[in-house]
Length: 259
Image 1 (cartoon, helix red, strand yellow):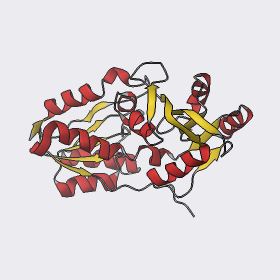
Image 2: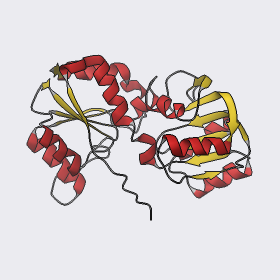
Image 3: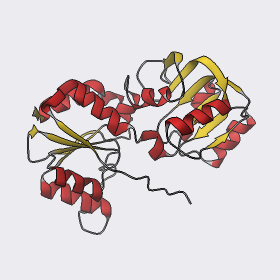
């Protein structure tokens, strides 16, 4: 067993709240009925299906990446999935804690782990030049072609098809990444000298900019770029608390399907 306060202190240590973007909503979003935590469900997103898994497990807390409470809620009816999910959490007394952009930018957080998917790096930093912060840019220990990085990406992330911009024969030495939807940070990555930028939620004008400026892009779905949250958090919680907690990664599916 771990107390809720112990849990919050640990989360604030590995993902300091000050690292969260101004628009974000992180921390304890719903306080459950118990201050003693025995079982936790880990999830990228929280919906009715995830709450049902928590109920079945008897979990006191769900730890998620994407905040369920993000914009103001004006009603708690049965009309939408979000409202039903919030109602169910409260009715069942299950707590909800979110680590979002503060965990993305944290040292050894989701962005660092995402960068590691694309090779070994002799130097890395956030887009601001510090160890912690949004985005990562690194110089590869062994430069390679864009084609080899594309192949490695499909194998490492288990994605059968990915879209990209660039010449497959181009030699890549510097890679920038932002897990999730970092399309608008493309220009920042370009300004930092990235030859390849990997993220998700790119728009047409992002692709045009990259092509016209000889910059390579790899577009990975928001889900595929962040589904590793649960396993990473499981590792960190196990390392800190050992057998004091029972942990379960929720079964989740990408809402986008491929035809």
